[in-house]
Image (cartoon, rainbow, N blue to C red):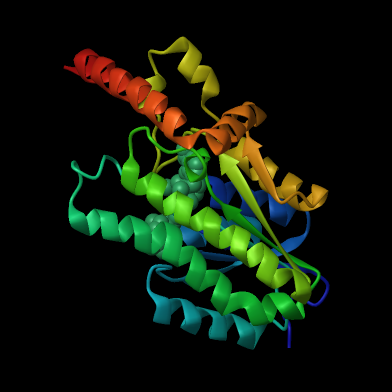
Length: 265
Ligand SMILES: NC(=O)c1ccc[n+]([C@@H]2O[C@H](COP(=O)([O-])OP(=O)(O)OC[C@H]3O[C@@H](n4cnc5c(N)ncnc54)[C@H](OP(=O)(O)O)[C@@H]3O)[C@@H](O)[C@H]2O)c1
């Protein structure tokens, strides 16, 4: 049934730009066959032309669309060996700043989008076992209290889902990993505010840095990984004293926001 008899099959969501497109290019170079998922058909077709992959136009926040997509994929492939659960969107503000519809959209995409895609693909991933799922979480999945509450909440929910599924899917031979990147320059997440900040600028990752870490976490079979590593101590500290950490992060974040607003006024 499979059209790609000798190749391992990877599904990459959010493959029309950013980390998703970058990891699809790297996977193709390592001889994976990629199924590229996102809403913008034209952009998916560009990435498919480069990688030799297939495309699936799908809004991951729509449960029925996602399950229909999984059914279509099952008619073309017997098994899936890797899912990069990456599609996501920014919040662009705090709970008091953005529209309620956006809060809903952020949760439906970053959290529930991840849930529907993984649940819909469990049978194919089980057929491909030992197989891997990499959730693209964020440092915001484990550090709260700064700016961007709605995004942070969605990323916290996403990592809880990922950790729960790691334990539920282990007996089926499906290993669930999570990459937690810091700030990276991509289409949806421009990092303009670091342009005039020489220290901040050095913290900004490229799409390729994150794509490399996706391949690395699978190769090393690690459960979770911060990119870059230096966020790890902050993650541990937050685990030990979350309230104090959130207070300090909130203070720094308000100061930074104020300076940024004054600079751009
Ligand atoms: N860049 C950062 O600083 C950063 C840091 C940590 C974590 N992350 C996470 O990394 C992931 C990828 O982001 P990125 O930085 O690569 O941004 P990006 O370039 O904007 O990519 C986002 C991708 O998600 C897709 N997408 C968004 N909503 C979708 C939906 N409802 N259904 C299907 N596809 C959808 C977009 O495609 P369409 O618009 O074509 O649908 C696009 O391909 C996200 O989960 C983000 O939260 C980003």
